[in-house]
Image 1 (cartoon, rainbow, N blue to C red):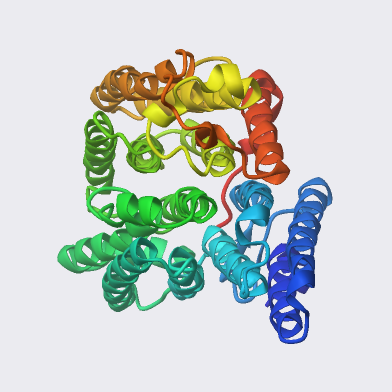
Image 2: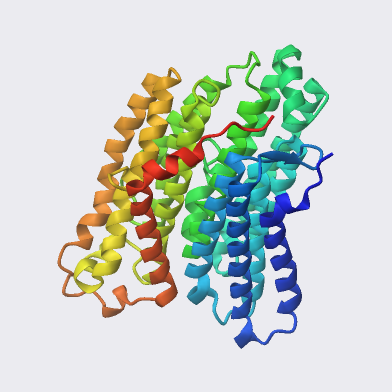
Length: 474
């Protein structure tokens, strides 16, 4: 049994920081609770350093009874999650500064991020569900952290749907255990092909339901617009970004490692869900006027594109490369757009952004990069990510799905331009001066950093893409 504790150093760093921060919150004066944010950022930096060191020096391995895999997908998922966590922490600084529960906010953020990391490396169904719970429960509290009516309502919806689909997922795990007599992916790989078809099919659909909830994909997407619109922009940025990374990598590992040889036609199921997610997300975003709801439906459509990689997980070697790179590019691009929204707290509708280019040209430039990046415009990272995923989909035999994705990509340009066009138009004479008032420097720094990272991933993609290759551990 490999019990190499250092293999879990990123997860350990976040957990230790959460515990220390929770203890410190009881005696730190309110004016000093910002130090907890520094502790959370330090834990993220330690996790990034440990992951980089692991990638450079250590061979891939499974630890603790092979329940957790440390391989290419885990390490790149860690880098993406921890980098995104640092951006969320930065854009939260002004939003929660001075709040009486400021320290608890960062504790919740650290705990839910730890759960996301646990999901990414899960090589066992029980480990997967434990990570699901740890990622979900603190996120429910974050959604209602502001204790305003819209946030409380959205947190309740988030919790109820999460509890329902969490129980569904647990039932699916029980069915797969009954079919394969084990919860470990390597053993399920050999046991499930000879298990009863109906048992495996129902169990898989139930487990995927929980993962689709975390990812925000159809048909488990109903919480996304309400939670995104009802909570604060930094929390909205979190729930539309980090859980998706964990859920999609976990789903890819489950399908690739545990179910490649079953008779269940899960590739077609994933292809249909991908098509439904990208199409519904785009159609619902067309006539949105709230910037947060528009980004919410945008993120549902992005899940559709990412699910294409899962549909061809066992059909082509290009799927893993496309998925991991696309997730990293989407994370920084989506967070960049939300950082601009955070920096402009009084601009809530598309019309409120009219004249932004003349008043805040730097923020307008970041918004241009991020929104066109979400479309998939070169030279942004999402363009290269979409290109890789579309190529993998064609190589995996789903040309019709790739064609639908291209059509949806073109169609999505409409609603992103509905936001961008007013940005470069003259501001109306009756527009209040406070509409473009900025929140503070940290949100602006986050926006500039994320926008630059989106461009850097696109430009340096040829150097980064080779890092995404490498077999998953059995």
